[in-house]
Amino acid sequence: MENKKSNIQIIIAYIITAGIFGLLCAIIPPFFLGKLKQQPNYYPFLYWIVENSHASTGILWFLVGIFLGYKQPKIWFIWGIAVMSLFPILTIYEVIVYPKSHNLLPFEIIMYAVLSVIPFLGSLTGMIIKNKKTKSLITKQSS
Image (tube, rainbow, N blue to C red; front, side, top):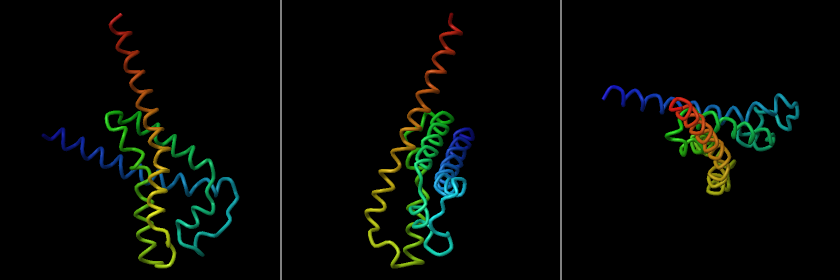
């Protein structure tokens, strides 16, 4: 019972970490690439992310998915949603604080679901890598 409880706590910690990493993957690249179009304090936060988004964000989401799929291959299918989980939460927050900032809210939520395919495919890749590594270790030990 205690072992199962600690596993659930570890999974919850991974989900929270995945959401934070997903958000950081969208925030950090514009600063490193030096192409900031808008300053973060003039506009709602998610609008700033969209204006400053780069292809590197998708690559980082994919890499985070690989990492999570490798570390927790039994639940690889939830990592795509987990990586994108903070975006809808921030959208709802911005709707409350800036009521006119999100006129197409249902489409934004759908967009986040579509974007979650990137880390989902990454986690699938990580799970496949982990399973191949495990199978190769098993075959080496049985030989």
